[in-house]
Length: 260
Image (cartoon, rainbow, N blue to C red; front, top):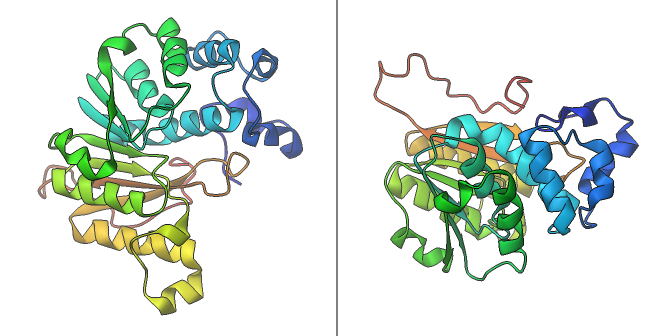
């Protein structure tokens, strides 16, 4: 079972109780009995709860995704593609000094996008100067991207994950994606592999080989399955020339507890 990293208190409660983190019910002040309100994360959760801005599941998903990817994807420029409410990109803007600009791109504005920004900015007012909402289809995202930035794809369903991989390779940037809706993926693994491993695992193996072939180092990480069963993160960083990084691992590792 994957441990919680952003909210470690859920590692010590009964597994059945911890399933509240996967609830689609609205986050409200009652949830704060589980959260330490004196931390940066806790204060942001408190403001989101006060506004009943988002479902519990989506809040926990963003925080646990952020905690597992922040050290590898933070760049001066970040793009949260198919961002939905945009909380994931906002967390990078709030907690990472290195991050100077975050675009939150989606084809339509999420109904609670501004409410989410209000909540985060109440705790971290500098976020307002860092984030920029972009209303655009993913097909035109290349017009907004910059070389060697970071790409987040937490909510890029199906073939959109593959489009985000294309964009990362095109711009030479880091990528953190958590694929879902595998039946709609644009990239199909070889039939024999899909039959043996199942479509979800086979698709992500295929994506990982593709990134490795484009000179990326790929790791697999996971958020707790209590939040969502589709919890695998593909974390890809462009390799630097030999001698700059020291020894680079070519493994796809989803089991190292230090990474999880």
